[in-house]
Image (tube, rainbow, N blue to C red):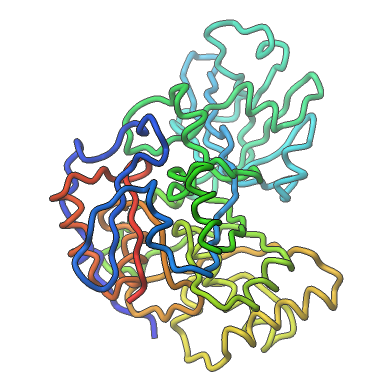
Length: 402
């Protein structure tokens, strides 16, 4: 049954000065809030390994943020900002970043009402020669509600990944209320980022350093990765009064056969780094159910977990995905998820969560509440009272599932 939840019950006062506008000078210098079914405790992120159960499996999201924000100009002089969300043609991320002449993306377009049918050219106020020779232009293909399909074309035969590196800027969160700066090029990216595709960082991972990762491995904790490309929907507040009326965005994810085999054979706790890792891992259970019941994997829909009782075990579910991949000669599988995790959700995979502090009335805050058995207010009140920094560049928490 789809739960009836009022989003106003997940509101709290977040003063602007508590939002971390910039990262700390050292990634692992952040504070760490520890919560295990009792009163929260303050520690330091650099010491996180001290609190992790030995023999666990820790899962990171190794997606990489792309400089997806582009600024164009009409012949009239009007500026149009285009924010690339996800590929339309070619649809596969790897192929998209390799094309050398034209491509289409689903985008959020600022001032879209002022863009009729004319071709836009990249705004180049410094008259950079490399940018000028590229002749990057944009054409509006169609409008789709709040998004638009835009076709980009350029000269010089360079891949689109390089086009974005030269012409784009890192899309830092809108609540930072500032332009992208040089510090964001390095720090709005995890150390282990590998596969291009996200328009927002999996921010729980921003705290990890090589030293912290080494201390985790020394506790006999197995580290592995999944890849979910984070969409701009991660910034969208829940606008409807009832969460049941909110529509989740689809995010593509990839998992490997070797990862699934390791997940199946693990003995210890499962520690997820970030809510994107949680959504990927929990989605795997429902992918496996689809394999068991229909013979093939498929995307996970928003309300799949709530619509009926599921009797399949996690082992049966993951085994079904593995069997499907082996039968079809696959070493990895790519799907999409719209899963929403709210109070009442029954966790199938994740035991421990590393995460930052999230916006009021957001789906991420609902996920936190579900994970800690409804005690999110205790945790957030403590964090506000104890000087924790909030949101993407803010401090971290280590939460044990209720």
